[in-house]
Amino acid sequence: MNIEEAVEWLKARHIEEVECLIVDITGVPRGKVLPVVRFLKAVKDGSLRLPEAVFLQTVSGDWLESRMLDPRDPDMVLVPDLSSLRVLPWYDEPTAQVICDAIKMDGEPVIFSPRGLLRRIVKLYADQGWRVEVAPELEFYFIAKNPDPDYPLKAPIGRSGRAETGRQPYSIDAVNEFDPIFDDIYDFCEAQQIEIDTVIHEEGLAQVEVNIDHGDPIAIADQAFLFKRTVRQAAMRHDLYATFMAKPHQNEPGSAMHLHQSVHDLKTGENLFAQPDGKDSALLLNHIAGLQKYLPAAMPLLAPNVNSYRRLVNEWGSTVNTHWGHDNRTTGLRIPRSGASSRRVENRVPSADANPYLAIAGSLACGYLGMMDKLEPSEPLTVDASERKLSLPRFLSEAIQRLRYAAPLREVLHEDFVAALIDVKETEMEAFNRVISAWEREHLLLHV
Image (cartoon, rainbow, N blue to C red; front, side, top):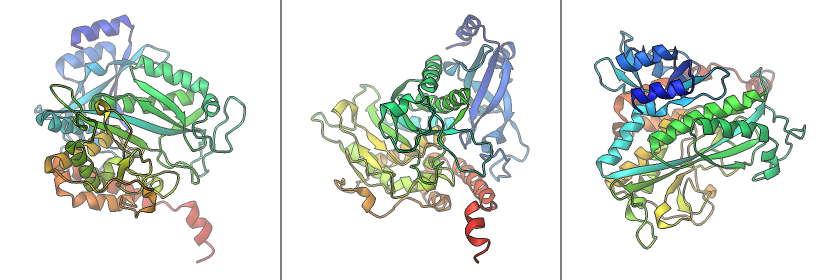
């Protein structure tokens, strides 16, 4: 969409304001809200600006004192990607949103932008004559409103007037309990051109999985980012919350963002992960080997919060290692049954709380290194992988240390970006470690 088309698009929908969004390292949407006249002026003259430091806020909104930041705290220019211009369907007043890219005042890309990182990774593939397709599966919970964070979360009341009391995986009736919310979700997604595919009830109480259709990594990351925002807005319309937190309930399964990824010939579109006879290609095996080798170091991008690692336990079907297998859901890397044209690897490691741009970029970077170095994977597993030892980091601190010492991965992701990511995550860990938990008060206060 060019500027002339954008003007007509905004006029036809009587848009009054435009939300101009960027996504920081933690996945939080930040930006500015502009009257439509001011927005169009900013598109034309490049006057839409924010401090570069916006990208490096913690999840609690604290500013970082990072060695990676310019001490002058300079502005960057937000460049609206007009192809992402969408109506915001949950407002009463006609409002639009647009996702922006970020460039420095000298015209260079801002290295801390998660969307910019994903764009760089996609270009690495394109430089080899490869085109990537991805498809995320996002799990989340509906929960009753919880204004006091000291209290545990509860399942919400459904249409029946009752909360779920037992797990109902794949239950149609359990999903139907939230039909009014899903009606809004479908309507909101259609208005924003978010291509959701399948809806299922997952194992947890009021836990749902929604699949987003496959496509270009940047477009799909945009959709996943907007989808999270959409689900939260739809839930609040019905007086409850939706959360993508990796492990919101103590005794319930965690929420994942399984990521299907495949590589195609840039010119012909042929799926390069399968041979003509349908067998796995050498390139697929190289890609899997790269994931096996580098995923443990990429975990700060795929499981970015201290809570993320509560999900990675040996129960409820959660993965704890990087074994792979055909149609084996216990492995971290699964090859679903498929024909040659749709051959793909499902990375089951990422958590639902991950920034979609970083999770996709990190997963693709690992596979890319395996393809470039022609790495060989382990033998595929035909048994329960959860019985094998844990090979993924158990804590965020361990994941950060692994990333620090994974030089090839740091180079692909860009050293400055990795240093900034580590600064953000270590700052969040320090804040977390200052909090005294209810468990400590319950079991240590009068017993030690």
